[in-house]
Image 1 (spheres, rainbow, N blue to C red):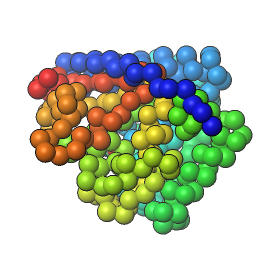
Image 2: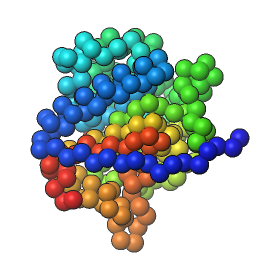
Image 3: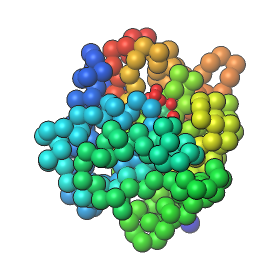
Image 4: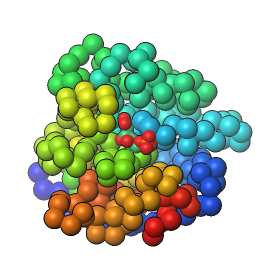
Amino acid sequence: MAFASPAKTQTKLLKFDTEEDVAVALAKYTADLSEKYINEKGSFSVVLSGGTLIDTLRKLVESPYKQSVDWSKWLIFWVDERVVPLDHEDSNYLLASRGFLSKVPIPPSNVYAINDKKSPEGAADDYEDRLKDLVSRKILPISNISGFPKFDLMLLGMGPDGHVASLFPSRHHRYEKERWVTFITDSPKPPPPRITFTFPVINSASEIAMVITGADLAETTKMALGNGQIPGSTPLPCTEVSAEGELTWFLDKDAASKL
Ligand SMILES: O=C(O)[C@H](O)[C@@H](O)[C@H](O)[C@H](O)COP(=O)(O)O
């Protein structure tokens, strides 16, 4: 099948004084996109990360958005998940469940958690099969640019080593070009077993928010927005993020301090 050539990603850089200001802006950005996509296509597919992102989303589950967002039209996915039981403290599902999903009326059948009874490889296959089923039922569209599933919004964090999702600089699966979902059993960030969306899926999203706060990410943010390369090594995964629509960086003053 032939696909159209990708247009250059539009990148927007938003800098805020405090983490609290990032949280306020992220809530409005997400609620505005929710309204836009629900008006245009009747649903809003949102892909979550783990880490601090869920806490930074805290304003979205408060007034006025708690009441104004049409949560019944949301579909929730994870860009990466630790392969542990869903009630384990390391689970990204549990994190999101406590800090976000339990506070708003998203139908449980619209929440796509991993199958926690499987091995990392089995869980990745299972998640990819479920995405394929959603595509075949026309619940998720396919990008006519890449041929990969197209989510409306991905909310991504970044590690100090430049990883996004569970795509780490020193692990070959960051280069996967065919699979939608892949797995890793030796993640440098604990816990070791994880599944993750691949770059072709991440980069097919309509909108991506990179949500980066804290001084420990200042150096990596500088590299990510510069040439993204430690001399003599390959570019960091965070530099490979692009969106079919718009990529927006939300930075607090500390994360932006070396720009
Ligand atoms: O499961 C995970 O570990 C995450 O999805 C991961 O990709 C995270 O987003 C980054 O490591 C940033 O984490 P922090 O926001 O905690 O810095």
